[in-house]
Length: 21
Image (tube, rainbow, N blue to C red; front, top):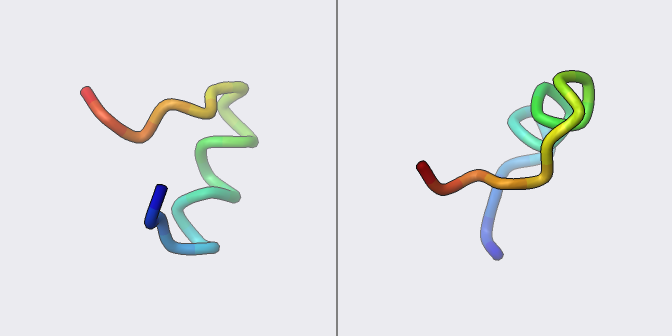
């Protein structure tokens, strides 16, 4: 569960909390 804040923001904007795959 080590993701960057910038990446998390982008994923949240996309509507997904999965950073693997």
